[in-house]
Length: 414
Image (cartoon, rainbow, N blue to C red; front, side):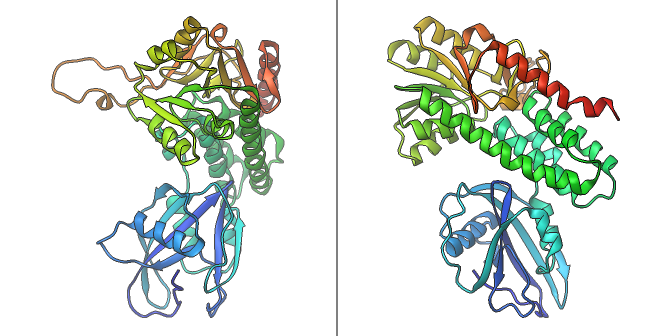
């Protein structure tokens, strides 16, 4: 990592990398900083010969030793002026660990909520750099790769960040409702946002602090649900698409896994590669082939995530889940859903979403296109729902739905 001085009189091109884990980002305080200003991980840009994301990845790996980095967002570059102009190129990575070595030339490091940047003396433009890569209702609405649990954490981060900059509680109401509308098919966003808004006093500071608490609790619930599934299952597993909770369960289980690629975005490939990096024996197949594979090989279970669990027990998940569940029933293979209780919806409405038509067909012929993102799997094709509190039966699902409806009453009280 290169320390960037604060008195440069020439235009500097700086790559600033943020590393995020459990909703917190890594801040560093260079040892030779004249003003003890906090920073992310920054260095002079290498120029156009290398992409900014690649430069940022090298900066982070070289400084921290972190090798497992997932690009979250590369923001728009912007220029700040303080003793000479500098152009900042911000990039955000996610990492599954906070285990870093001693950073050369760094006096102190801290993992803090990003909003802590506003309360510290930092290098010029650090908060503005974070805002360029922070999640937003727009990026959450457009995200077809990450699962509902991950997007709910990002939604909580949006609410937290917004609470740090507004003066009135009413301004957060608009943000919370906009976030819920961004992905109506994902009940977990609504439920976790409702718990913050209903449980906090009517002040931005209270919402900010409650959102931080909820991020930690939500991540713990997802991890515990994954552990529940790993303890319950045995034998080779079939799955499809991407789910962080499924991924963690299968990595812990360590049994062979067959993953359907999940067209058109092929997020199943990312799932397979992630499991393979953990040493799991992984096979990838096409969506259409997975039912046939299920019938001619021995499987201990099908394990899928859920974007939403309806109070009647039906499962909303990535399209292809229904077909897989039907094939599993024919092959006498049990089907389990792993999800936190927060994925239980308040009512039985199925909110369908359509992906871009061009992802399926972009030719010139007059052809109608359907590109559903989710499908609905009847609850009677699901053996059980595995949560942070163990196996959830139909009565348990109904009780959880009632609890979530209670948390949603803050909207009616407006």
